[in-house]
Length: 126
Image (cartoon, rainbow, N blue to C red; front, side, top):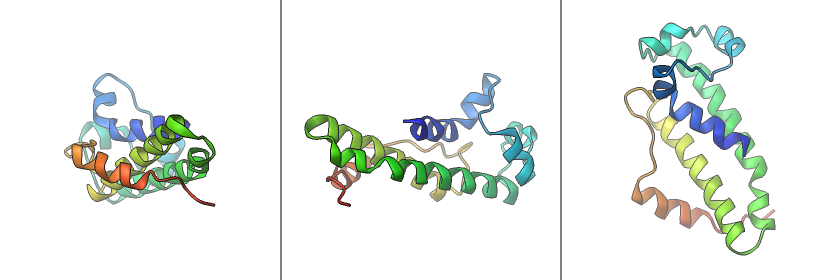
């Protein structure tokens, strides 16, 4: 699940920067006018929000592209796949709700999120 790893990167921008890592593509940072200083200063301006909106839309599209696999697989593995997809999408929703300020409002799954994810993890229909 490539998209799940990407979502984890967006969730952990601050933590990764603290250990000398930036997982945002440099060419896309440049395209949106975002520099390493944005991360260092935890600056959430229009450029940062546009970059992160682009990143979350791409990750969401990737997650949804893989969603039918959760219906193809039966039993526990199918449920687990649907929960993984629901969890990734939930984190993306939280990133958007935080207006991409993952520096001060790192999105995390809380107990109530698991209830929502379970409710949304019914098999997808095509």
